[in-house]
Amino acid sequence: MLLEARDIEVRYGSVRAVRGVSLRLAPGEIVAVLGANGAGKSSLLRALLGLTRPHAGEVVFTGNDITRWSTSARVRAGLVLVPEGRRIVASLTVHENLLMAPASGAMAPPCMPRSSKSISAFPIWRPAGTRSRRCSPAASSRCSLSAARCSPLRS
Image (cartoon, rainbow, N blue to C red; front, side, top):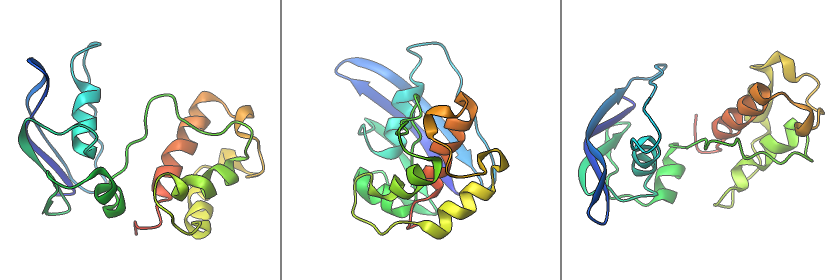
């Protein structure tokens, strides 16, 4: 199992935002978390990444219990979150955004080989010199996802 959440509970004071959520994600699998506004989707994702400490439950990533790990340790292990809003730099090219990805938080060398691999995964990005502001919303989302894949610590 790549990622597993077991009975996650997130509280903000006396308010329970997430109650006993469990999920399993195998390599290559896609899982959708759906719900109304205020249902706890973002709180669940924040708990998985360690941005919010779960009140109960555990998070297991690649066989390791990471429940008590810091957010930075989880990111170094390869767990990333692509937030809503895409968070790309519009004035940079797609390629430049991918090269900047490792600089989000920890000092790391640029990931040129991974960015080239990421660009080739999305043919609409050729040429990579396209300014990000000219990308469609869907292409901007793919840029954000590829930037997450660009982590130098992932295989």
